[in-house]
Length: 515
Image (cartoon, helix red, strand yellow):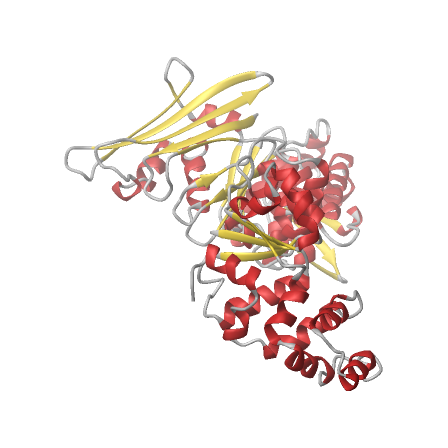
């Protein structure tokens, strides 16, 4: 069973939308954007009992009182497609909610048996601490075990119960499956001999009544749910994937809670590779980076939803996306993205924005380094009309404008129409020009970032009266000097001088306005 599409209309917390659900679905967005609301909507249509629906849905969930709040999903199972529809409408009193949930073309009312066949599980943001749910997982796993003749032995020989729990071939096989699942999620090998089923205080007709699962770790044996909150979340996901005959779709809200980044990456691989389909809401770049780009859906601050086109990136573009998303998630949820060639360009643009009173964060603007002008078109694809649809502005050196003009099908002088700004020669030449020879030389020669021997050529030219802007720019753009040079001059770039760096000033004015 797989979820293949989702649409929501007239919900109070998100705008109307329809999206395709691919192998997995990863929802990203700022706080209060509506990610969790989408997961809860799925729980309404796929999971909750009728009684729970009436206890959960209120008039506050309906945006326009005169219209119904609807959720529609399409499910696929072995090539067969089924539609399910949830509808909540207000009575004339504006408070009483009438709810219906149907499936199929004939409007069949969804039953508990229908929900069981779908196999939806919803793990809310509090799931690591929900011990009742966690014990239910172990109970369900035990129910899948076929003891056959062993069951009679368990019932007849109560004094051998503990030994049988540990030596049973069926349970050993289960412990091995659990150990393999935990090993894939933890930065260590889990030995099945360190897992043991412990009998409860009383034996009844069910040989597994009150059986608990314990794990030996770091020389200590404790119940699986007595571990830290972060590890409990990993165990929960790992165990649900073992219930693949019963659990087909798992919704998880913020699975990264309480987890170290390394554990987040382990969990992400577990989520991605498990048998069940995962519907996630997350803030974790480490988790997002493990999934295919076209499985990511961005929920904007206004509740709007953006889904990229299927296979909108090449394999090389995907590698590029994975590289930066693990470090920075903000570009996906930004109001505007500025892409520059390298880290020195980024430092200069950030400084100029700050000293001229243009707070990039306040305007929802995120700066990215492309790693070179050749990567610029890839960023256009990532954030363009087939991607995540974030307004994009680029800054490049003069030597790149011909190639970019060709790729964007415009003349070199028309690149700004594509929001591509070009530095006159490069940013080194522009900031040296803005500072002037004397101030630039002073900043470089007095900086502790350079040894006197490194600035000797500048000092000699200065003494001979031949030092000029070109020589200083050449010195600053040398590979060994590039980063240190911009760090040395930044304290000397005031608001007045920042406005003289022409390409940066035009870019910031275009994105933010005058300051």
